[in-house]
Length: 152
Image (cartoon, rainbow, N blue to C red; front, side, top):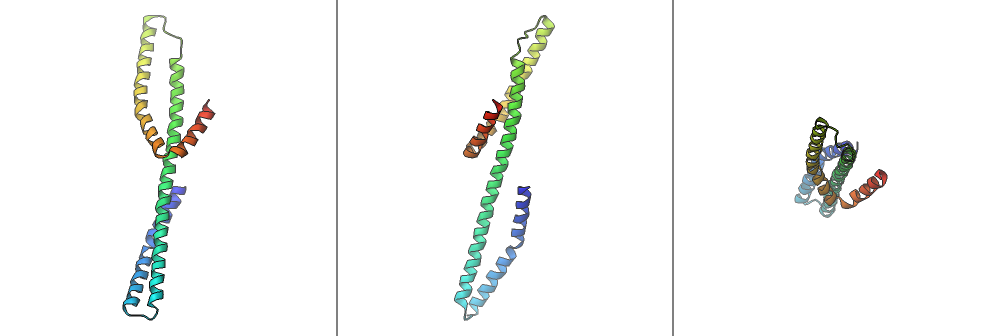
């Protein structure tokens, strides 16, 4: 929701850029014509341009913050899915059933090989999560500690 509202704000911000251009052109024209209030006009022009620059800087900062928050939320979702998957595999591997006959043993071996393939696939999923942890260490550290606290 926040992302959508922010995108609407950015669109509105972009739609008003023409106003800044018009103000600058009008100010430049008045200054070139030697208007008696040229110093005031120049100061107001700078004031508008500075405010526009600050607004765009704030928008860029907000964009980065929202992007980071989105990454953190995706990270948390991926962590939850990964922990659930690990729990399932842990239950499978913790079994004391080693089979009673050849068919049963072969079925358990196939299941174990499938689990090993799943673990290899999980590696590909875990490494990007660590990359996110490096990018957003403080936010994620707090979330991870909460996750660990509630999962134990």
